[in-house]
Amino acid sequence: MSLLAGKSGLVVGIANERSYAWHIAESLLKHGAKCAFTHLPGERNQHRTSRSIAALGVTDPWLRPLDAGKDEDIERVFNEYGEFSDRLDFVIHSIAFAERELLQEGKFITTPRAQYLSAIDISAYTLLAFARAAQPRMAKTGGSILAMSYYGAEKVVPGYNVMGVAKASLECTARYLASEMGKDKIRVNIISGGYLRTLASSAVGGTGSMPDEVERRAPLRRNVEGADVGDTALFLVSDLSKGITGETIYVDCGINIIGA
Image (cartoon, rainbow, N blue to C red; front, side):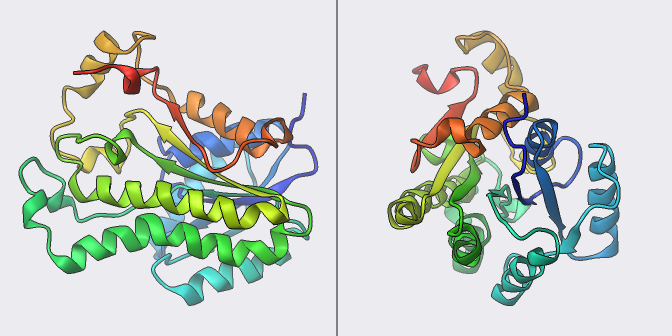
């Protein structure tokens, strides 16, 4: 069954085959979606993202550089997207940033103002910027905007620090966007994915024992897999979730319901 036949959209955030964005794209493509992609600026980043997209079986992908910290870059990518498709059914926001040295236990209090604001800018404000750029095209048919969060937005996770603050801002931003964009049949949701070893998660200190702890304590007695998040994204992008917006969906094998 092709849940996304005839639908097309933009996936932002593939760094390699371990990225949540990669697993999301895999699920969307399997169900008939057409996906356009972006990469971080620079030849090395382009090569790494291109290689990852090729592993999805996509040949000659629509791929553009994007510095999400620049409004003009965001506007350019969404304007150029029209070369790829005349419709925009979904946008996947799977980007975040914080200085690695700040993501260590006991370092939150040392966070400088500029780096605190930078984390919120790239990790949260960009969702608003993407939504604003997508709205004129997406409003034609309605659609789904989806972003990635983590439980550290709600509870203290050792070493997650300023990224937890940024993800809390991301989740709140999604709710306000969902409220305003609903009139255009645009849904905005968040997936709070469990711990998965990626380039981003490997930068967080204090997570070395997390996989073992999750496997021991989570109701499903296992760690989350990329496909778990990918298939949830498929549901949230498809018409099966047409009544869901402004929500944070936990895909973490249930660890978020367990107390200390």
